[in-house]
Image (cartoon, rainbow, N blue to C red; front, side, top):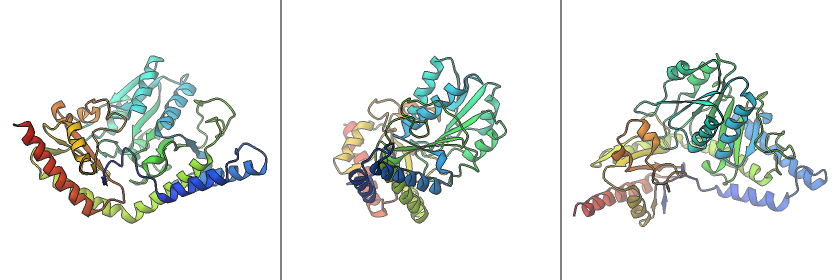
Length: 380
């Protein structure tokens, strides 16, 4: 099997599974309980929070555990809009955000908020000047995806953060689900107020995530109850999930330091192979994260190629995993100006640090042969 769908989900590190199992079996007490088992669980939870904070160079009090990217994005957007709506009801985002942003924006529009959806250029980048141009007196939030989940385009978070630093009443939220451990990041230097992460995108376990919220920032909580996570997310904490997430993030950061240059070489190899195939276009910009390569094979039905490759043990995807079953054309590619008939035949190869040149050589050979065979069948 050659797995090239890591942006949908990564395979958990064995050490992550082991840490989850050990904690779940031996430290099963409720962290809110005052007896020894509860206090042991609470200590592990505090350690996991501190470890993650150290890796991200922030304070433990700025780390909140969630169930993943969707919840983190909802917590950030709904938490801000609910608490700060008396200050203003205007939000700025882009046309290429993940559905966990887009759908929330649609809900907020129904609640009387005005949403500005910024366009992107043909490379998938939003213009910082566009953000500045659309800031209003009642703007309370700007939400921009760090790394696009379909093309890998890296938005200029540093420059956007510097711009918004001159507007202290506007909060800056970044969806970093595809970015963490894959591109440089500084919450402080980039003036980020809220940042969303999901463990299963960096070899952690599904159902676990992290929301960074700058110290002093107040949010209206989505869940009311026992007041866990400093009243931000009530409900008994998933201690084993938190510990395993800390482990996964540490290992991902280590892989980034050791293997990022290798990933760049693999990206160049794939690009060269794809650009050498007839009727194939690469949509990912050159200056994108190396683990995502988006391309189109003109005239090839997406689901047909996906299943044909699957039969040969190769796994890639079409758009994002959340949209792949709906047969919708990529809104990201359409926003970039890609013609619909080309966008309909788009695919995503997404790598992990564990991928190697040998398996990619095999995958590219099979991909080329399969596309050639499918075109022959269609032309009969």
